[in-house]
Length: 323
Image (cartoon, rainbow, N blue to C red; front, side, top):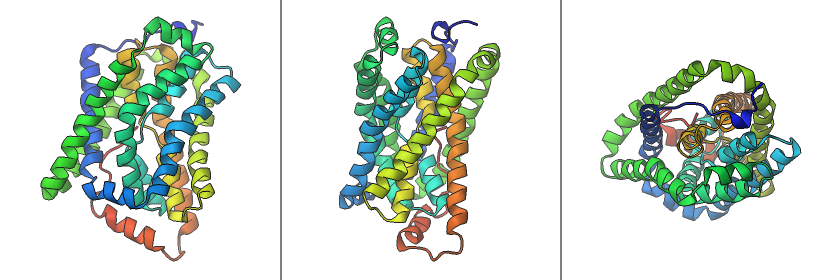
């Protein structure tokens, strides 16, 4: 069997452009459901936001790095996990928080802050942790990864749609409310179609090597969700806020990871497999955790945070996803 580090998965420029558009729509959906007041709310709750920021951009990449060493992963698989860990959340985390009975208002604030910070911190994190990995660093040197170039890509895919969406939501809230009902589902279906077509076109590679990533992704995803839960509890946040922390740290925008794999890593096999499988499993695991939480809290009196969060979701529903 071919070494997974030697595999390059083809993805033409037209498909990359489509993926950029889909991811831009996903971030637009996040922004359409974000208000300037969400950032003001974040300022009023700095401790909770700081806890999640530290977990997302410092602890999770560091834990991921140690996991790749413990599992003795090949370079491309290790870089794939590190890349996913460096990705920001999408608003699937908001939807799962709502389903679990958590503090959605806080979740939305965390998502907004996390995506803004990720524009700069994601490329820096990837370059730092990837360069430390004993086998992944050699691949990075071959590829000559430029954090500045990745910053530009992330700025286009996250920054521009985010600014446009927030501006529309602030200036034309009625239009934003209607648009987010369409933008999110269309973007999610588009991302799903891209992944399905990509897997179908590379089916032989997928079936030959997916076994290498299943266990690594399962353990990694579980650690990400557990980290979010543990740091929320350690910070002594309310139960509803702990649920928000769990999904903000545990849910990653693997679609963005896929785009970066094909844009900067020449479709490196292990990285592409990790990002694709993460996007599938992360949703399954997140829904499972949220459903179990919902069942446990069924019949329990609602906390003010949870009640307010439910109202905050209103009729907006799923505005987007991170796959």
